Image (cartoon, rainbow, N blue to C red; front, side, top):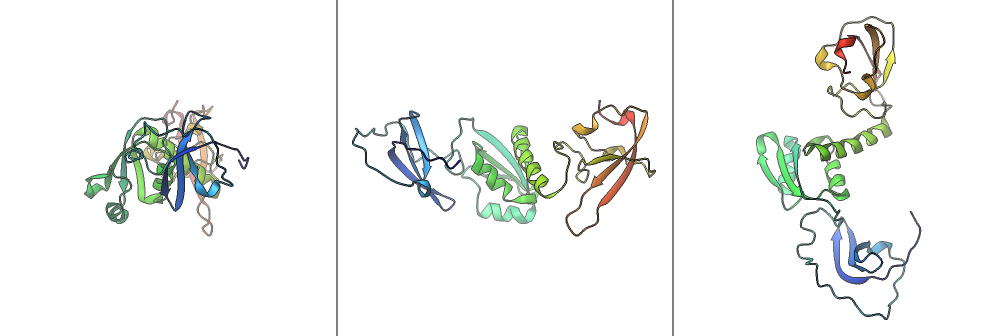
Length: 231
């Protein structure tokens, strides 16, 4: 949204994050603090009104529970991450957050205690496939949904499939009458698009697993009995 607006701000503090400076001050319009990127301020004009002093916020600790400058109205959470061995060494020498603790170096486990915000999401996503959010489940789902949307920008994948149990079984389904070998039950994807009634006792399903550009498409033909699928 490029709509310009005018605020009267009682400035208290400036903070730098990710090569951008922010002004934090009291905003009478919201009766609360506002955080404003300095590079987005078009103009400044002095206002001859009584200045409202800061009497409540200790900025020495104000940002302790977040990454960046955004402080959501949400509780503190314990986030459990698993890093690949090569990336773990990088994270140990350049911590994500001051609360960071490595509880299991052999398994690449890092624990953070903070309030998740957009900056947290962006930083975790920047590690790509080198990190996995293990806990809490709500934050794992939040990050997973963002990865799913990003994946859909590059690959032709059926929307909404996030709870698969087999890493290669992305859901793009087509029915086919071709015969092939049976896929092991352990490899049948757990996906909401496969929860519909199959209509018959036995059906042939064709999963199109799209590979990156430059690789031929891979087709997997499976035959599944109705009892193998979730109801």
